[in-house]
Amino acid sequence: MSGDEAVAAPVVPPVAEAAVIPEDMDVSTALELTVRKSRAYGGVVRGLHESAKLIEKRNAQLCVLAEDCNQPDYVKLVKALCADHSIKLLTVPSAKTLGEWAGLCKIDSEGNARKVVGCSCLVIKDFGEETTALNIVKKHLDSN
Image 1 (cartoon, rainbow, N blue to C red):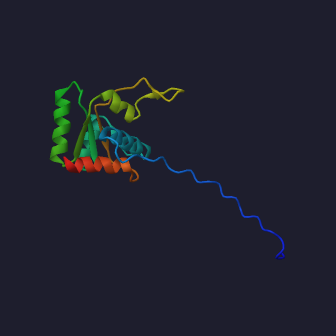
Image 2: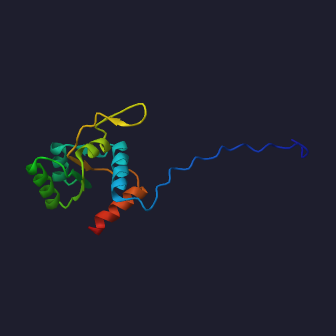
Image 3: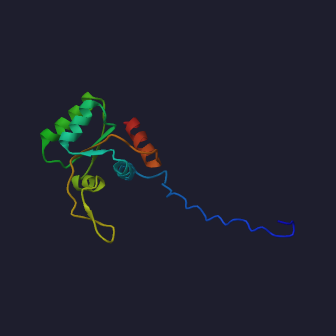
């Protein structure tokens, strides 16, 4: 190549930025994003039997319980296990909401959840990667 020829610079496509998560989100939204991220990493366990096994082994990092669970013995057991093994416990208002977050539903063509199955208890054993939502949940747990 001689010095007279112009060399075209390679065209670099713009990098798509990751979705920005606002710092002022509420705990419920942050918990939803955390559960969905954990589910993507295979870190969510649903149901009483599997949750109790993980809590007993002390492999659980967070337990989420639905407030509208209609079996008081179920609620007492989960709360007692979490207290005995020093596992953080959060509650959500609806089992249907928790079931949707846990992936117990069908997603229609418009992206809406259909046929949602309720989930009274789930345990997170692996949060996946560090996110802003996870930091908000951890900050909420530390303040309580």
